[in-house]
Image 1 (tube, helix red, strand yellow):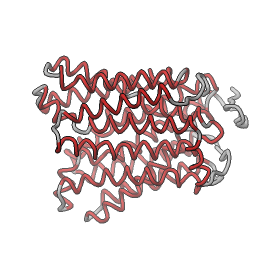
Image 2 (spheres, rainbow, N blue to C red; image 1 turned 45 degrees about the vertical axis):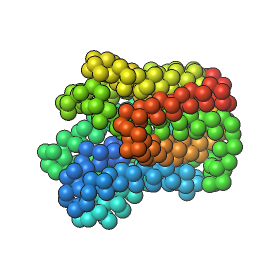
Image 3 (spheres, rainbow, N blue to C red; image 1 turned 120 degrees about the horizontal axis):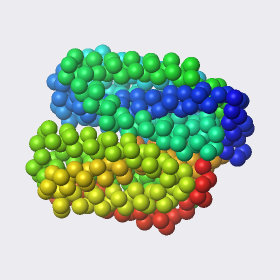
Image 4 (cartoon, rainbow, N blue to C red; image 1 turned 120 degrees about the vertical axis):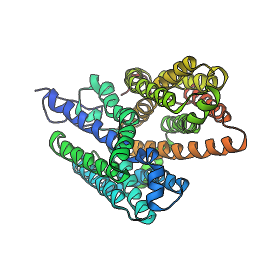
Amino acid sequence: MTQVEESAGTPLMPERSAARAWSGVVALALGTFTVVTSEMLPVGLLTPMGDSLDVSEGVAGLTLTITGLVAAVSSPLLIPVAGRFDRRVALCALVIVLAIGNAAAAWAPGIGVMVGARVLVGIGMGGFWAMAAGLAVRLVPTKSVGTATSLVFSGVAVASVLGVPAGTYAGALAGWRAAFLGAAGLALVVLIALAVLLPRLPAEQAVSLGGVMRLFGDARVRTGLFVVAFVVTGHFAAYTYVRPVLEDVSGAGAGMIGTLLLVYGVAGVAGNFVSGAGAARSPRRTLVVISAVMAVTVGLLPVVGGSLLVAGVLMAVWGLGYGGVSVSTQTWILASAPEAREGASSLFVGVFNGAIALGALLGGLVADGIGITAVMWLGAALAVAAVATAASGRAPADGTL
């Protein structure tokens, strides 16, 4: 048996085998995969959803926006509500909410029920992400925290590569409702995995909403959240409209765009682990590099992306960079507030999801008002702002996590 220690100031966890500890980490990774897949599922199903619910694709697309906004608002609220509940119990409860939301979406006879279902998905996602993000440090030895955190967040990257395309494929084969029903079934699998594989995880301390908000007063937390806001807003301003940009600049057809996005996604999974190892040593240096890589690749795409080969290389490098954003920014936040990991994580999830919605909105305004390739300049400019913020702001000491 291996005795697992937490960071300074946290009580020792009971002894358990390394295999049991890592199986808990895998269960959390499966959970992040499931919540992100559930959030993004409408992306590949908008047309059949709109036809079935008798609404436009634009209105159907609001089901994605609603989920992100609910997650952004609910995540800072759910940590105080969870109080001193055992985190295994709380995570299981949130996954049940997620399963109900997906099942309700599969049944929804109209847009009203669908909106309510997506609100439940947003609550389940926001709460699960906020709690799960800081639990790796409680499950494995200190030397393995970076790897474990990367594994938990690999669920986010793998969802973009496998989860959403799989849902789209299931929708094409059996109808869009079957895709949501499959997500509900996957949530039940996660529920069983969490109940069986996670140890008891007593709450470290009760956190009030005021306590969560006061964390923003810490300069290190505040800097990390601004980096998240800039880099994630910039990414989604550009990435949301990458298909029409590739069509316009590279002349890529639908099949080639699918290939380029797959290349991007696979590179993103690799970037998650590469950046996770780097962030464990130095969050500041890792985020400066990631943001700079994004600024260069996004900015170059409309300039030199006329060649499909060059466009493919740029998409791969972009994916490699952005794939490390979640784990690197989360590492920054956790290292900045080790005594209040859940509260800081809830702020992180709120800002992250708010930035997704803001990025898509700003990108749409720029695309309509200036031109489709201008969204790349916007994304590059916000990535540069992230570089400047990460380089000049207060950061946690290297090797803190």
